[in-house]
Each structure stands twice: as structure tokens, then as C-alpha cells.
Image (cartoon, rainbow, N blue to C red; front, side, top):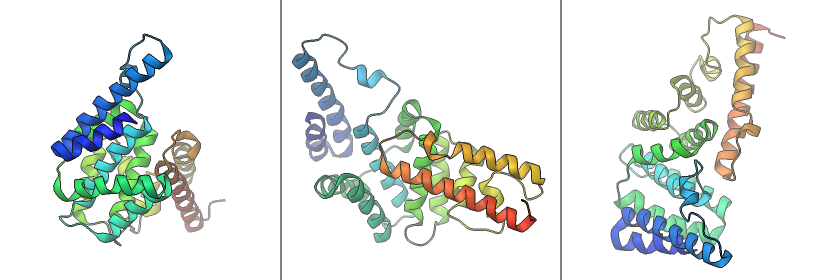
Length: 247
């Protein structure tokens, strides 16, 4: 497709900013070509004005957010790189994944990207449930080397703010990766002093919020994140059930 060729050309000429510009210019050219082939007039920028994000756009922005998380603690972890590499291989296949990862490798080592600008773009074009799964995936990257550092938590908290993820939702997701005595309660977004009825209500609310069926996306990482979070919610409830003897 023209947009990907333009993105790679732009990257080699002007770096990451050039890739962004090239991608959008190429997308417009793709649109022009489609309009000419179909013989229709129409608005060639229609796909960009809709409040959705295309798979290609999402991949490019996901790539950038991955690089931000990996660089958060000031060092590039091989385990975190491998985590991202495996994601691309399983999602896109070897040939496309290798091409994407070459660009990714350049981005995380040499370029700076604007987290706020990327997140603002995604906020305008994705549902809240998708952004929750995205945050879960980014936490998975941070944990890939065995632990989530304070610097990574700080960066993830910043990204969550830009993505307009609520504080309770952020802490719930964080509790799935950073273990503590009150993890089960944090995952269900309740206090340890909550009544049994409040626990049951919280479980129903969280199970509904994180049910994979609510996440409509073609992105495999996001789908997997939804399934993992749903399982964590179930495990948290089962832990409290055993602790309190709730039937």
C-alpha cells in the first residue's frame, strides 16, 4: 500500500516525524486511487474524519507507545524487546513483523515521540474499553523483564492520564501486575472493609466492564489483554470468596 511505502521513505528521510507525515500523505494517495478506480467523487479524507482508528494507524501508534514504556526506566531491556517482538510475530507473521520491528528498533533507540499527542489521537478514535486493554498490554511489556519499576509505573500512570483512564481503573490494572496483600480488592476497585453484598456487586460490575465481548477490535494484543483481565477479575473474586466464605 502507498501509505506504508511513504511512511518508510519518510522515516529514512526525516526520522519518526517523517514516517508520520509520509503515512498520512500515502493514505490520502491511497484514497485518491480508490476514488478514481471506483469512479466516485466523495470525500477522500473521509476515513480520517470518522471517529475510528484504522488497523494501520493503530499499529503505528501502538509501536510508539511500546517504545515509550521500554525507555521509561532509562534502559532497553532485552526481555521487553522480545515481548514486543513476539507480539508482532504472532500478530502479523514473520515478514511484516520483521519490517515493523526494524522501524521499532530505530524508534526506541534514536527517536523521541510525543506520548500526549499519540494518546490524544487514540482518545478521539477509540472506545474506553479498548484503551483499558491497551494499558493492560503496556503493563505486560513493563513486567516482561520480571518486575515493573517505579519509573515504569510513573510513565504508565502518565500514559493512563493522557488516555483518560480513570484512577480506579488504572489501580485495578496495576494490581494485576504488581502484587500486594490487598490485590484482590484493588482489582475489584473496592476497599477491604466492603460488605459481602458490595463485593458481589463490584464483581458483577467489573466482570461486565472487562468482558472480552465488549472489546470489538481486530488487534490480537488487545483481545488477549481483555481475556487476561477478565480472568484476573474472576480470580480476585474467588480469592475474596474463599477468604470470607461467600457462597
